[in-house]
Image (cartoon, rainbow, N blue to C red; front, side, top):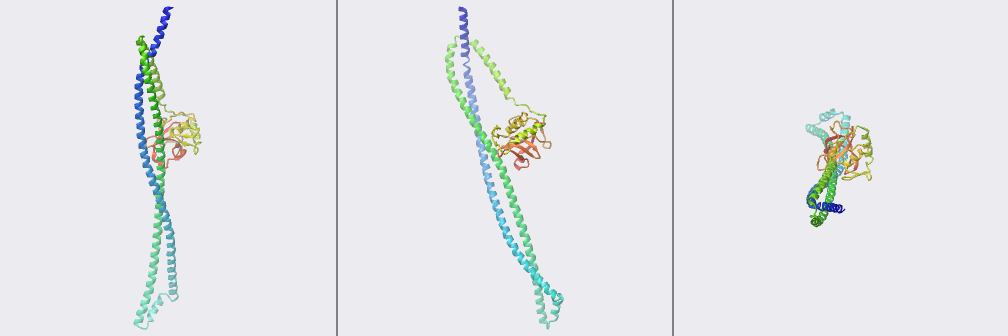
Length: 410
């Protein structure tokens, strides 16, 4: 009985010593936390630096947008001015037409007069009927004056006609130019608007990351404070446990901790392993995904990192992942994972249901993804319109599309 009591007491003390001797690892944990705190501070600094760079880019884009708006206003004024010039030209044209009509009428009268009086023969009769040489010279001068006047009328008529045609051509060319300039700057504004929306979306994401990292930093600091307090308690407990079989307890405890660490490491490794590319052989899944996704056209909003079907809020990869999930096809959640799934196909071979990738965020590769619908259109969730159907012929998407196409369902 005494031996059993002593054995039990020893076991209790041994168990206590196992608990006590596990505490020195707290210092290791504290050191690890210090390293995590340092990493988190570096992460926050990096995010802050990226945020500052993005703000500078947005500032430059805002300047470009303002300049573009000024160009649009100036071009519209030029168009208005040109239209006013057109009105003035119309008035000038009417005046020219009146003058030309008057000259034409005069020439008609002259022609009728010549025809009535016998034409050129009458002029000869006039000359031959002169009573003297002086009278002959006077008559010849008068006839020459008449012919000169007719010639001047015809020259003036031709000059007015040429001026009229030139004015009309110049005005038409000017109007076409200012209208072309307006179309160009308006297209530029559309591109800038897409870029501004993308940058604002990315900036919002950076702020969320920074806030999350700051919260994690505070949690780490709190954990460190708790560990420091616990370390002090461990020192006191270790002094009491030194009389026990510390060495065996340490070995046993370290073996337990090592096994647990291995299990945790294996679990983390398994959870962090990226999903494998998925290729389904059910083509009906394509139509199901497109049909489900099309429901949100005009009734959704863009949210960085969002995949909230209940509230119609998606980012680009979240939308694609959700749409195909409704068809029973499990694909990656991020553009970086999606960009490596399925099989790559050329643009000449792409068909309905393929994933197409764009370099939108600062030109970063595969930073946007959509579902190709055919005929140069695709379904996507973007920062400007939420879920929408867009065209590859649009200048913004055309410039961002570099030909990366993946087929995940066939």
